[in-house]
Image (cartoon, rainbow, N blue to C red; front, side, top):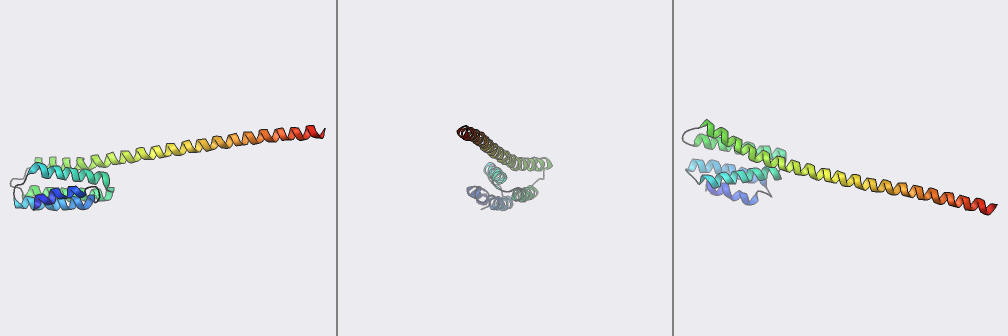
Length: 155
């Protein structure tokens, strides 16, 4: 049951990343209290869900989900037979790096898109300014020519 709660939310990781992480955290606690489980698949599901949370959710939701998963992981370590501080620290670091790495990738992608939008806007403004300058020059040339025609026809 707990293993299913840990791995099944991977299906919803993009559409609803925070609820998926919360369900996985509950599954981690349930599975740890129930007994041994396939460690690699469950931990991989946690990492995938945290990375999806970092990439697809807001910063606030991401921090909430990361905090809940850290509490679930710490409680799983406490429920496990011998408490190893080294394992706890390494697991916390791995979980934080998974979320923060995906969050930074998303922030970098957003900044790149904003820079492209700003560059496009500047290019459009430059084209509009050049068109206005050409229109002014053309207007001045036509006005000067018409003035000369009017003066010469009056003579």
